[in-house]
Length: 167
Image 1 (cartoon, rainbow, N blue to C red):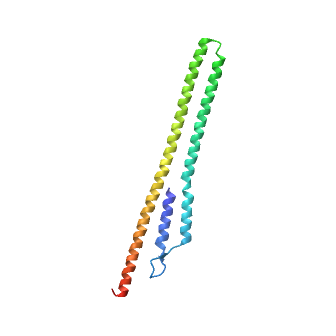
Image 2 (image 1 turned 135 degrees about the horizontal axis):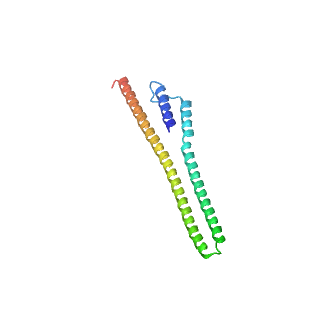
Image 3 (image 1 turned 90 degrees about the vertical axis):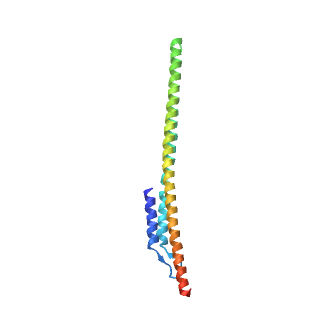
C-alpha cells in the first residue's frame, strides 16, 4: 500500500501548488491532468491486493483438490490392496484396518490442508482489509484538512468583502 500513500502525497502537492482562479473567487486552479493521472495510478494499484486474494483462493482450491486426489488415490490403492489380500481372512482383516487408518489419515491431511489454506487466505484478506481501511482513514483525514482549508479561505474572503464594503 506504500504507493497509495505516495499518490496521496502527490495529490497534496498538486493542491499545495494550486493558486486561486481569481482574487474574488473561492475556487482554485488545479492541474487537472496531473490529478487524473494520480487517480488513474491509484485505480491501477488497488486491484493488486484483490488479484492476490483471488490467486490465493485459487491456490486454496488447488490444494484442496490435490488433497482430495491424494485421498482418492490412497483409497483406491487401499481398496485394490484389500481385494488382492481378500483370500486370507486374517490378511483381509488387517488390510481393512489399514485401509480405514489410511482413509482417516487422508481425511485428516485434507482437513489440515484446507484449514491451512483458509487461514492463509483469511490472513491475506485481513491485511488487504486493514490496508484499505487505513487508506480510507487517511483519505478522510485529508478531506477534513482540505475542507478546513476551504472554510478558512471562504471566511477570509468574506471578511475581505466586508472590509471592502466598509462594514
